[in-house]
Amino acid sequence: MMSPEEIMNRSAMEAASKNKKKRTYMIGGVSALVVIAIIVSVVVVTTGGVDPEKAAMKKELTKALSPFNVNTDDMFDEDSHQGKAFAWLFDNKDQAYHRSQLLQRFALACLYFSTYRIETLYSPNPPAWINATNWLTSE
Figure 1 (cartoon, helix red, strand yellow):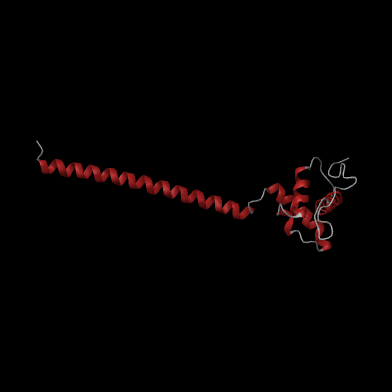
Figure 2 (figure 1 turned 180 degrees about the vertical axis):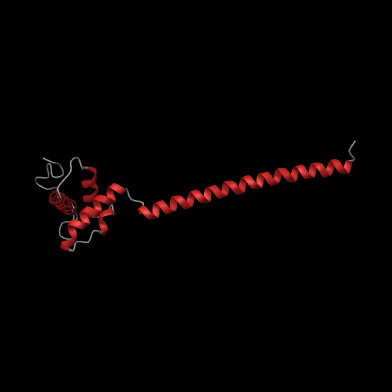
């Protein structure tokens, strides 16, 4: 038969063992979360948080526009005219375009998004174009 001291020591040891297991699981869980966060951070930093297909199209457009000294930094800014044109071009890539067609479509989309119903100092409430039909279609 165990003495009361032995019983208390044994229950204290069991409690310490349970606490140690809990601590080990918590450390393991936190470590796993840190590793996952690091992996996600590395992937986002290396890809720039951009769809690889969009990045490839931007690279193609940048390469095509480089002889003309065109700044292509705004292509991923969804609020810029170039960003809207690029997003439209990317979302409507129903066929493969030759580089010159890609440039033409991008240029015309930039023109459309930078002039259609855009308020200016001289035209605070601009009307719609007289003929804006099918501007952003293949027709």
